[in-house]
Length: 278
Ligand code: ADP
Image (cartoon, rainbow, N blue to C red):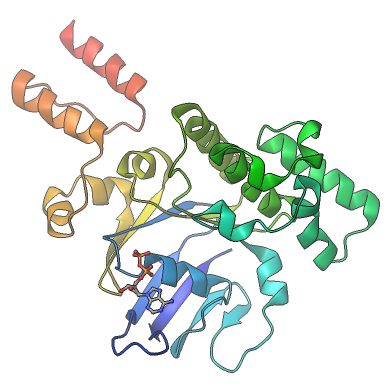
């Protein structure tokens, strides 16, 4: 699904400053779109407008034929299409068993019992948890497992858009790599539109197709990840770290005078170095 923010403005109640300040942007369908920017720039606020958790004071968000704007009260159908994995799984999890947690939304959307069971098992499998987890208390699980349950809860109702807010915070290397695989699969095999908010520039570099930089409530630049991450002045201006792979390429150019192509994957880069060194 294509997502268009059309000149939206939003101020939190009681605040005297706009958090979103006349923002327009376009997130592409069947792609991984990353939103990056400093703390407090408005990323979490912005993504919450996509499924109507936050309604802009001015402007609208268009998600295919859905609209989020003042005056529209019912977002049930929209939320069936737009799933959100929150930053802290604890904010999302509130049932006493994994089965009830994943099944809750399916009940809300009136899934038949047999369908519900199938969707729960498929979603668990996709995040790499087995049936034994169904009876466990989700809040007693490790941070990585909680995150997986939170993701499975969203995957179970099969939304077309999936939003991940800081998906890798607190995860170990293996769980993080696993999550990267799942997100790629969601795009490549299931043609989802993915939105990721993350401070982890290496993750964003590895995963995303397009990037928007948010600063002080506005999108200051959007483009392909190549355009964004190769513009060192832009990154400096908005205090965004340079991904390690790009730093490495620069170093090879400076020290060895070898100009490497832009690569997503460190293994491809190593092959290039080997070829150049021969
Ligand atoms: P980011 O995700 O980029 O860190 P946020 O969207 O969380 O940014 O916050 C943007 C601004 O909105 C910050 O100045 C923050 O203090 C303010 N803010 C966030 N949530 C609330 C809230 N519930 N009430 C008032 N102000 C808020």
